[in-house]
Amino acid sequence: MTDQHFPASLPAPSAARARRALPLIRRTVCAASLALLLAAGPAAAVAGGVEWPAAKNTAAQVEKAGLTMLDTEQLAMHIHTTLEVFADGEQVTVPADIGIDRSGPAPRYSPLHTHDETGTIHVESAEWRDFTLGQLLTEWGAPREDTRFGAPLAWVDGRPWAGDADDIVFRDGETITLRYTSR
Image 1 (cartoon, helix red, strand yellow):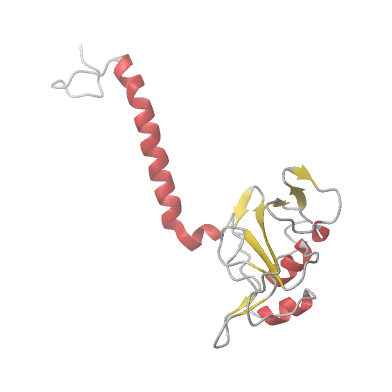
Image 2 (image 1 turned 180 degrees about the vertical axis):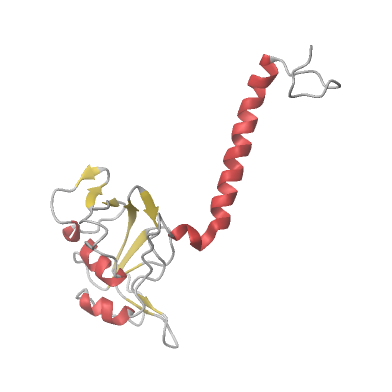
C-alpha cells in the first residue's frame, strides 16, 4: 500500500528515512529565511511600522547634544559599544551615519557616531571623557517618549538599568538594549 501523498510509482518513505531528512529540511528552511531577510535590506529597518532614520540636520543635532563636529576622526579615545533597540518586541535598526555630516566636500564627525546599521556606536575623541546614550539619542533624533511609546526600559550587558537611560555612559565592549512599548 502506498502513501496517498506519493505517486504509486514511488515508494513511501520509511519513518527512519523521514527522520534523517529533517535536519536537511530545517537547514534549507533556515537558509531560505536568512536569504529573505538579507534580501529585504533597508526595508528591515522598519519594525512594526516604526522607523527612526538618522537626523538630516546632523551638525545642529550634534550641537544640541553638547558635542562639536570634527574635521577628522580623533582616536585618543577609541571605544565601541553595541546598541540594540526594540519597539513592541521588534528590532529597530540603528541607522548609519548618526553623527556624520556628509553634506560638504568631506565628511565631518561627531566624537559619537555610527558608520553602518550594525548598532556599533563609535566613540572617537581627542580626549577621554564620558559620552552618554542621551547624547547619541539626541544626535539620532530618536524619541525618548512620544505619543506611541513610553520611555524605554534599558539594560546594560543584560542587567536592568535603574536610572534614566539618557545617563548610560558608553563603555568599550558593552551592549546597551532599549525596549520601547506602546502605551
